[in-house]
Length: 100
Image 1 (cartoon, helix red, strand yellow):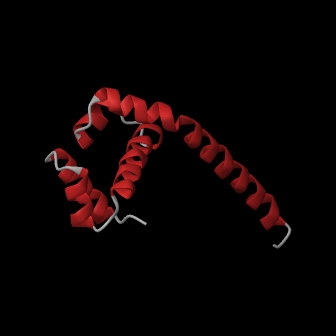
Image 2 (spheres, one colour; image 1 turned 180 degrees about the vertical axis):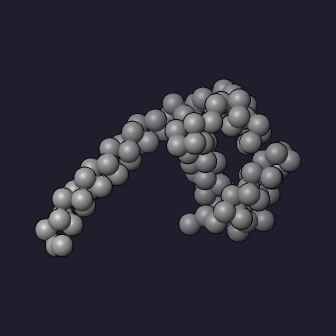
Image 3 (spheres, one colour; image 1 turned 90 degrees about the vertical axis):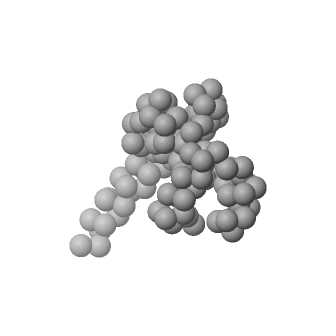
């Protein structure tokens, strides 16, 4: 689980062009944890917060090609997550009516 503070530190280090190994040591996370969190933030910014690729580039210091690749590689996961959350919400609403 990532805290808001860790996300802020991660983004600041990305702007400073620190290597993932450095960030990993400072935040006490594995390099893979860092990579996954960066991808997650990019996808959240793009799909949830409706940031443009240029805005994500400014926020993360990643180049546009890498951002576009991350978005493309993760689009199916995001769509499935959206469908699942809507389905759960729909089911929860109906289910709660039975227990009122």
